[in-house]
Image 1 (cartoon, rainbow, N blue to C red):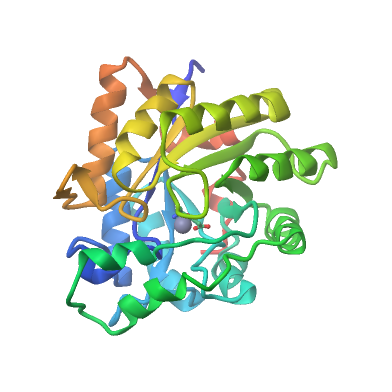
Image 2: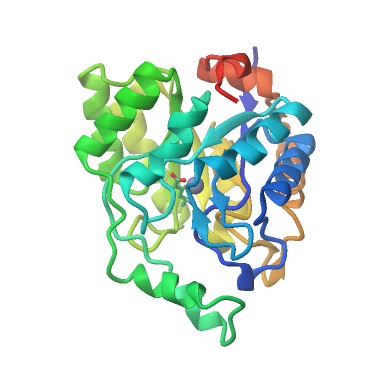
Length: 309
Ligand code: KMH
Ligand code: ZN
């Protein structure tokens, strides 16, 4: 197979809140619909969180995931990747419940504890649909997004070993790549590693081309040929950094989890709109887009028939 670019779409996440965009999927039906449309637009992987259906509050209730996972699987072939990051105000056990129940092909694995500040988003709004929204944003001034070595090893053994999942290794800074290289040297993780370079979260590395190059150079030095990478630029740099990542030989992640816009100052009307845009860019660059089956082959996934939903 020649080089193909894998598109991940992260459809809702736990950063943005309902007041920020009317297009953010909230209910299981909305999450399913957004995921299927994103897959139809060209995404090979769908990265999934859940939300409380009435309030939109980030939720790791496995029962909510059970409402949308089979529905998405019935309507498209995309790889369903379940978050183990949840939100920084959840306990680790809460965060792992959906992936433990669903035994997915893929789940996220955040490679270090850090500040994860989403409180600056508060300044853009004066009225809120729900009381919890400004409170959650403020809470990120004092909470730690906890991903200790023990936590990482628990996820590797529980979901990787026993569950057969492979990982989207979310690296928010250079040191997280060092941690991944440590686990590679100890044979706790196995190639091909799928490394998500996350740029633009306050507390992690900033969203600049220079920083993306630094991440890539570090990963090349430490992980050599053992890895594939993808690029996630949070906020307004999403499309530019994804494009740069693709040019550098990587894959891309888009979706309303990480950016609500389709162009500066314009809200994206759907996740699929962002997927369609990155498809157009990749096409113009002469780059081919991976199908879900090709993504499974590239990332050595266990297959959609081996999950528990
Ligand atoms: N929204 C990303 C910056 C996870 O789900 O494990 C972080 C994320 C974490 O995707
Ligand atoms: Zn996520």
